[in-house]
Length: 166
Ligand SMILES: CNc1ncnc2c1ncn2[C@@H]1O[C@H](COP(=O)(O)OP(=O)(O)OP(=O)(O)O)[C@@H](O)[C@H]1O
Image 1 (tube, protein in one colour):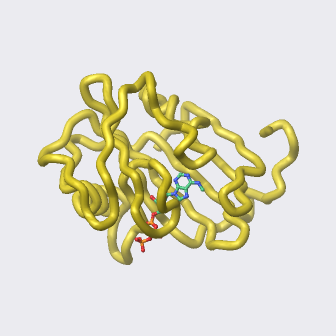
Image 2: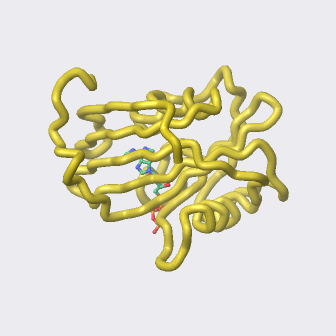
Image 3: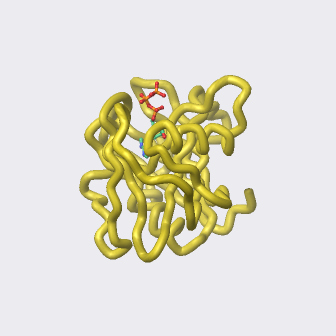
């Protein structure tokens, strides 16, 4: 897919919405959520959301994880960025974090249902179409920059590079 030239000029692309995602990976399992409302409702993803004014990406991902799942990641580290050209809705730049431990008990909230999956059975068919292109890199502790063009829920173009220094 990334061999075809991009329908978006990434050199002039400017994101409108800064956002975050958090993946907690512990004891051979990954902590995901079923999102109950908002963008991607019904899909499985990591906890995360829009960065509020005045917040750093790290502050945002800690707040969102606490709000959505009632847990706080320990020693989170940024592994990736995802650039989404979204067509009809504002473009998103998402900072992606991983943590290997947490405090608290994953708890269902108004926004999300917590779900643990074994690393061998990640439900990619219930996730955004781009996830399978970069989540395996995160699980290998590799850094990455992914660029994706969507029309609605459908991915039109993708390119992922690894070995990025954040
Ligand atoms: C297109 N392919 C995609 N692949 C993987 N993840 C995607 C995604 N597109 C959006 N995301 C993530 O989904 C969350 C939206 O969450 P969020 O901004 O909270 O949406 P929501 O509409 O609920 O807004 P509120 O902040 O609740 O107002 C946020 O983490 C964002 O990075």
